[in-house]
Length: 264
Ligand SMILES: [Fe+2]
Image (cartoon, rainbow, N blue to C red; front, side, top):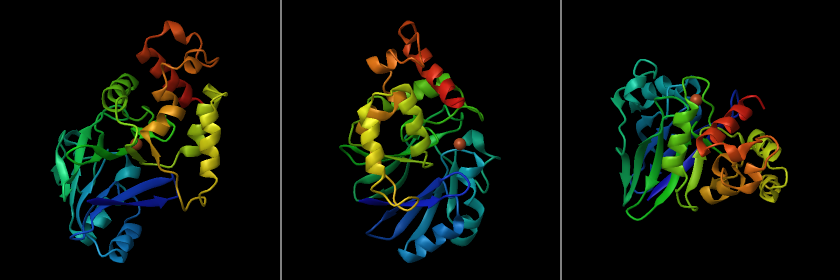
């Protein structure tokens, strides 16, 4: 089995880094290190040995801790082949469907997911029979998707979301690269003001200690609150903000929604 530790840095961008580790032998990999000292403390506290650093993409807030963490742990740094030169300390390249960590039937698998940038990967914990969780970097957020303003492309983003995530099972857990719950729910609400599921999620969030505990969603929840997963719903097609949505293709609607979010 592979276990997950979620590490949060409030400043400047509410970043999440993740440690994926094996209970059996104490080996671990880190996805998107932000605060190297925080990660080193967590490794020591849990008695873990870091094998690899995996970067979802090349943006500075996702590779910030690479060099310090590499120096301290001697872990190998992996990134997209086209991001070489932009990812500090990069040693090795990621490839589609490559396995970057394994333990007792669980594998951590890389999925190439262009859109937010052309050099983006997500990582999934999978067993033989199912996908358990996805580490989505800046591709999928709670109640939203990543922007395409720094090296991305909204059409590619749409095709990646459609091909990789529209049919993903409801029970798969989502671990994004940032805590953007609050802003994204505000946008969702502006698009679908009568969506009661948004109100329900807000009250679930209120049971969590702010900036200490975080609501983890699954794709079933995202299908209820994330407008980018709801393009066929009447409440989206009839949304005043998106009008006239019914004349648009699904891709055009996705791009229009992304553009509205950019200026929201
Ligand atoms: Fe990014």
